[in-house]
Image 1 (spheres, rainbow, N blue to C red):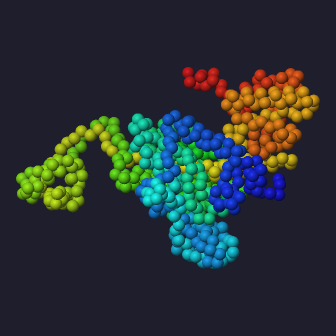
Image 2: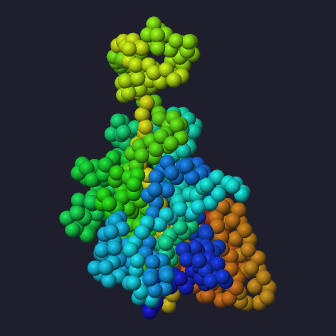
Image 3: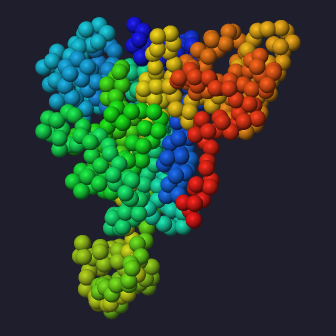
Length: 590
């Protein structure tokens, strides 16, 4: 293993091989902003496609995807509570004027948990542990809340106030009814979105772990809380129920336990560790997703947040964390049980009907109190306005009218005060076929750039004479590399290049992503491909000219196998895990 840490090696490879680097470097750079190069973009896209495969395509229509704007009107984020609650504690150095996030400085210097504490509690810890400016050693000011939303205006000159969205969630909540109608009015229903978001972080100093602009992959899963056992039971079958995950529960944390325990999904449900079966289901799918990216199970855990650590909208939250050499345990996803918070707030602030209708299995006979106007009494009270008042009453919702009279004892119409005696009351029986309700919501939310980093760190392998990324073929930037051997006579050289280029082009036409390189020695080309994680390399050499065979080199073992070009594509599909035995599948179906 080299003297450098995995982090330092990744930073070096990131720059040299085109994975990532700090943005705007020629102008000094901007903290919390990173560019992703040609290789980094390919890896990120493939991680994204794996997420889509696990959470959308494999769910059989249970989750659908939408796209909403990045620019968000202010009232949307007022209704969601972000304008009030989306803050972090900021402290300033009295000597150099630099600004820092207070809870992070306390955790770094005092080694105590500070997330979710009040400003007074943070201030006490700063003084108790003598927490100082990490740059100049100056004293710090008392922490104060800082809004993390990026402000903007919608329209030039005197435009409407808005923000860059801090999450994609609100676009899915405000579009819920539209998507619900498109989905033929059925629940449960997940609405997914992948997109860029902006958070005006105070002092991002953790590379890809804390960015001001990044990509979120998340969905809001809407369901009927009264039918959750029945509906979730169709998905919580044997293989899922027996699936194991590492979980650090809030109960254990409160007792001072710091190590996660292993639970099956069945145990999480039976021990009531999770609030709803849908939370357990999506946690299991999320764990399988991270394992599919090559992250070892013992490096993945769920950390249940304590009451003071949860977001304002959540009744239960689990952070999904991955262990890293550089940062320790880092959050890559959050699972929140948001209940009716968001839809309820948008109903309150917009006046829109975002409720759904729950049909009863059998109609119910219910007794209801109804209300009718008393014309004689209303004529006494309204006088010449009698006709207008009666028309207004006829247009009003009877349930709302009754509710107002029961709460206030009167109602005012056209400046006429009408008391309870201006109405008749009667109880009637009605056959009711259903009722309206606000769906509950579970939200799994993943940070793509954080997953990108933890995948790279967990894939980095040091050997005696090489360093390489042991990426799963599904997320490698290229499926295969093609190299012609560059030696021999000019005629042989030209012929090998012609065949190699032809193989690369033919494989691209099949949909494979192919990397072609004819610069430098074959050893150096192998090394370059290994460093960016290409799983297989095809080499065209002298024997190719004689017998139409090529070499397939395996990245991890460096084993080489000889194969005829006619059989090359089928063998690659087999190696990449994309060859399907349809006869076996069809036997299962039949």
